[in-house]
Each structure stands twice: as structure tokens, then as C-alpha cells.
Length: 409
Image 1 (cartoon, rainbow, N blue to C red):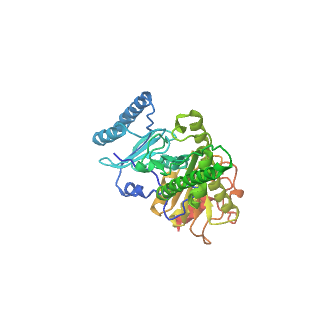
Image 2 (cartoon, one colour; image 1 turned 90 degrees about the horizontal axis):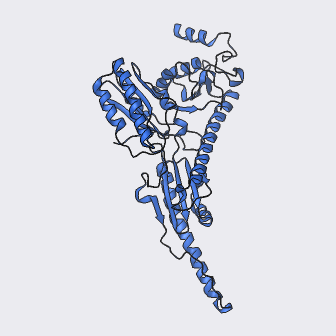
Image 3 (cartoon, rainbow, N blue to C red; image 1 turned 60 degrees about the horizontal axis):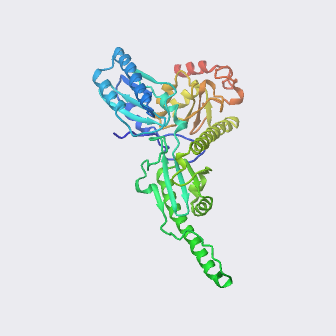
């Protein structure tokens, strides 16, 4: 069975500065008639005990959902797809959304959900899906030597870089075909100097042509796979030659990971730890850049709003281009805001706590603003997620009063 994964939103430049996702595949859920099953579960199977734990946790959820009224037939279908053997490695989760008669969404999550959950109710639950957005990193590891390279893909639909092609097929290994790789040590005096120089030139030429072949393949994968990160390791000279040949798009997302050797890197715990550190550093940088972007926009009074009432009003007017939620501190109406964002084709991003303080854990970048758009800024808001001073500084009305007045109109 094929399990889909979150992808970078179309229509915007792909960048390592932010992560938004195209959630258009959720539209069938929003258009369907409830009630709905919403299941989010850690589906990691790194050893027999974790596989057994998945079965046990699902068993508890199934009993609860049955007691709540979920039809037995759909629960049986979900159990079959959830517990079937899976080739997916690494820590990951699953999201399943269904009506009483049909599975509408079955997605692999790039990390386990913050908390396992199962719900049977009138509306689908979507926030747990959004909470793992920052972990959706698509990266390519390139182990290079002077004859070519091995390529390993890590994608949200298979969150582990392993010693297999991970979907790359025949593209997972590149050998340049130029096999004069070693410079000879030629002695015997000056009469042999021309032979040495000639061979040295041929060897250098072989290295360069092999690097060209690797670069051509890597550049193509970067374009086709919309990568977030390009990780490079291996022979130092070969790395230098490859960087000279890579295109601008690949160089823009390149990170060097020391300590690797072609065909051996992923067998070393120290290398895997370094690769995990570099990846986590990238995620934090991307989160900080998103936070800085929103803060700068707010501080200069740009096209943005913050706070649950303000964002809800902007969504109702179709003004929101991007909804921003703080993971773990979402407002009570986060599910409703998410559905409104999807219905108006707005993008959705999520930030971990500590990057920026959003009142009630929510903000939005706007397509446009006018005189009726609430005017607020982070500098006017309290240090917690409460409403205390998140109000229009030019109005004596509270957000609640403004919302009620809007309803009366």
C-alpha cells in the first residue's frame, strides 16, 4: 500500500527558510459528511517490542472508538492497514481520517505525533497533523569518492536514511566511468618527468569528469525531489571537486557532514549522530527564520494579525495567506481556524514554543489589509498566550466586543 506524505506548498519558491505544506489532499475530508474517525499514532517499528506496542495501543483505541459508536467494519479496515508489515524505517507516525464507511486519508507522518489520539466525532481533528510539520525534512545524503558517489534519500514518507535507495532506484549510485584514479610515484630522474606530469593530468581529469557525472545526477534530484537539505560527506578532494560542479540550487541547500566514507558512513554511530545534529540545527534555523519573518512583519505594522479573534475575522474575510500556529499552545478554536484556512486556500505553518510569543498561539500573514482589518502588534501584547493586551490600540473595545459587534452586523 502506498502511504502519502506532506509536500511543499506549490506556488511559492522552495526555500530552506520556511516550511509550509500543501494540504489540498485534505479537501475530500472537509467535503465529506461526518461523523469522522481521526487517528494519530506512533507507528515506529524499530524492534519487535515497538511493533507489539503499536498493536496494544491500537487495541485500546479500537475498544474506545467502538464504545463511542464507530462502525465495526471501518475499524477492522483501519486495523488491517495500520498493523500490516511496513518497509518504512525510523521514528514516524500515521494519520488516518475516515468516515463511518471509508478511509479518506492514510498518511505517514515524518515524526510521531506529540500524543497518540483517536476520536470519533462530527468534525475531523487536524491539529495533530499540523504539529509535525517542522519535522518534514526532505534531504539527500551524498557519500562521495573520486570514482563517484552513493546517494541516500530521506523523505517525509520514509523518515530514515538507510543503506538502500529509498525510492531512488538506479539513481542511488553514480560511477563516473573514468577509472584512472591514482597518481603514480615515478622515479628515475628528469627523463621520466614528462610521463609523471602526463599521468597526473589524466588522473586529475578523471576525478573532474567523475565529479561532473555526480553533480549532474545530484542537480537533477534536487530539482525533481524539491529537497530541503543536501548533505555531503566523503573524500575531501572529491567533495571539493563536486562543489565546483554543482548548480546554484544545490549549493544553496548544501551542508557538509564530516567523518563519512563512501559505503561506510551509515554504519558508524558517530556519523549518524552528527547527521542528526546537522538536521536538527537546520530545523531550528528554519523555525527561527519563520518566527523572525512574522515578528518583523508585526513590528512594522505590515500585513499580519495575531490572536484568535483577529485571525478568525481575517479568515472569514478571505484575507489570510498563511496561518501560523504555536505547537502545543493552539487556541481553543484551532480546528475551526484550520478548516477555514483550508477552505480559503491559505497555507499553514507551525512553530515550536519559544520562537515567538503569539497571543493564544495563533497569527496570520495577510493577502491584503484595509481600514477594517484589526491592527495589533507583538510589542503591544503580553508575554504569555493570553489576550490581556492583544487589542487594537486605536479602539476601546476588547476583541470579544469587536467579534460580537461583527456578528450583530
